[in-house]
Image (cartoon, rainbow, N blue to C red; front, side, top):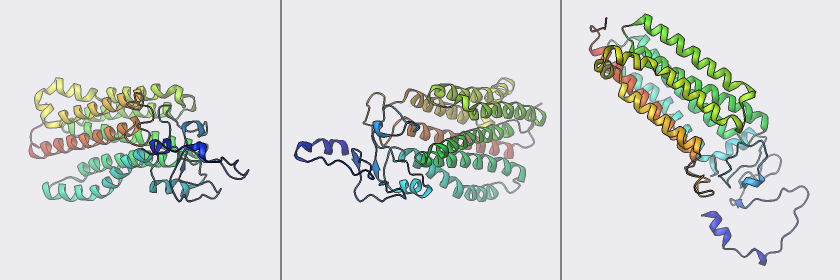
Length: 323
């Protein structure tokens, strides 16, 4: 919409002045009354694809809405107050992160009221899952906020983002295996060790500088997917061994919805849809990365519902364990 308005102006009627040496030329996308950072660059003046530094994490199908390099924490945080092409990525995880903080206490009170004999160990596992999700959402929010700071800060925040992804994967795996194999402590421990080892190995690969950059984008995503599929082995094992009873008691149907959310989100992310089909039309809202974020939130929610389903079954059928 903003670009269409600019297109209606006849620029030939205006005399173009050569900018002063100390002033950076303005981009084609600007918000009124810009505030200035410490280096006198207007914060709210957005850049086009051709104007961004080479080290930016750019999407070739997102043509406008990029922020200036700020070299300032406050400058990056100030970008929460205006719209740019990372706004959707920031708020799609910032809002769920805040919800997780307040929801943690609410869920604790609810479970204590629902299950008078709730064991501290069981709550610890659920709490771990919530904090892992919070870590993922928080580090993601931090990364997308700080992308415009500087190359070093952007790189460091990206590493934290990867750690957050590994954290939520581990939190989900640990909680799912715990309640799924509630009466099988040895089998549960075995799967915990295997899944944790696989997740940490993926983390080591992700943090290796050799696999950074756009060239390895698909490889990194495949590593996460491979870890997820490997961690689904306990679910398959339990279903084969105990059949429908296992599916009913452990919330497997919700875990399947979780997997579906991840797969659909990865499809949009990897194919860069819909902006690939309509370059420039989804520069600000609902481009592929934001859609991926929304599906991640959906996957986390589905896993939590599955965990609570398994918890409810275990507490109402505590005397029933499988041989």
